[in-house]
Image 1 (cartoon, rainbow, N blue to C red):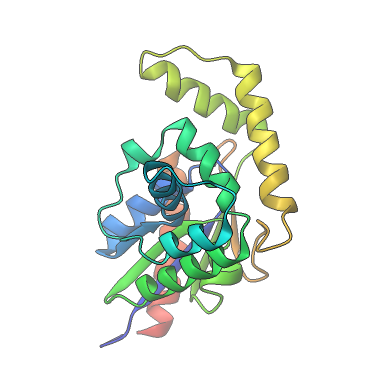
Image 2 (image 1 turned 120 degrees about the vertical axis):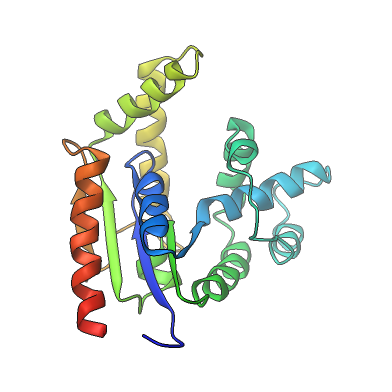
Length: 215
C-alpha cells in the first residue's frame, strides 16, 4: 500500500478494552493512534479552563476547532469532572462536526492509523478497511473499572460504577447524533471472557487478512 494510509476503526462502549487494544494494535503495526474520546475531553477542559459556559454550542464549537490532537494527555483528561463536562458538549452537533473533521484529517496519516471511539466505523471513517466493535457485558465492564480504581489505591463503589456504565451506554446508544452501534461490516469482539492478549490475537488475524488482500 505505497503512499497510502490504512485505517483501523475501533468502536465500543466504555471499559470494553478498546483503548488498550487500539494502543497495542497501533504499536504492532507502527500506526498512529487516536483515542477520539480524548478530543471531546480536551475541548471540554479548554471550555472549563477558560471559565466559559458548557451550554453554549457556538463557544464549544470554536474551541473544538482549535484543539490540538497531538499530545493529548490521557492522565489529565481522564479526570471525572472533565468526563462529565465532555458528555455535555459531545451531544452538540456543531462540536461533533468540528471534531469529526479533525479526526478524519488524522486518519489520513501515513502509513496507517488506529482510531477508537463510539462512531469511527459508522461516521468518522465509514470506508475504513478494518472495523472492529469491541464490547463486553455491563457487569464485566463495571468490574474492570472497579478493579482498575482499586489498583490505583483508591476506593470505589461497585454498584455506583455499574449504574454509571449503564447510564453511559444508554446515553451513547440513544443519542440522535452518531449513536453508538456496530457498523454493518464490523467484526465483533466480545471480551467478556477474553483476555486482552486473546482479543489482540483475534484482531491481528482480522487485520493481517485484510492487509494481505490489499498488498
